[in-house]
Length: 66
Image 1 (spheres, rainbow, N blue to C red):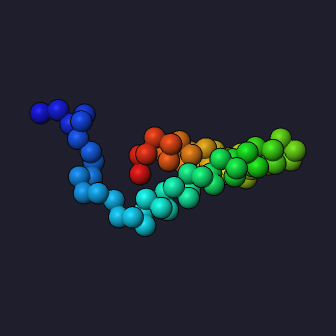
Image 2 (cartoon, helix red, strand yellow):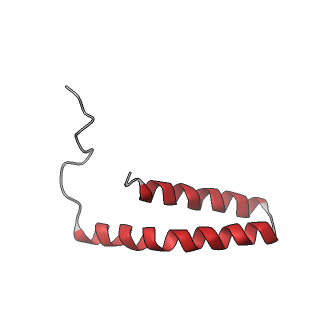
């Protein structure tokens, strides 16, 4: 039996979760841009790690993995 067409969670998501995901996906791109500019101007290890985390969150939200 193939699981490619099945969702991981068969129940629909609650409305508050959908709204939270929408707000986060709207705000993550400006945060990534701001962090990239800050990384170019003043590169530190913390900025690199934070930008990597923000890009990871953006990818997860874009592909709707959560």
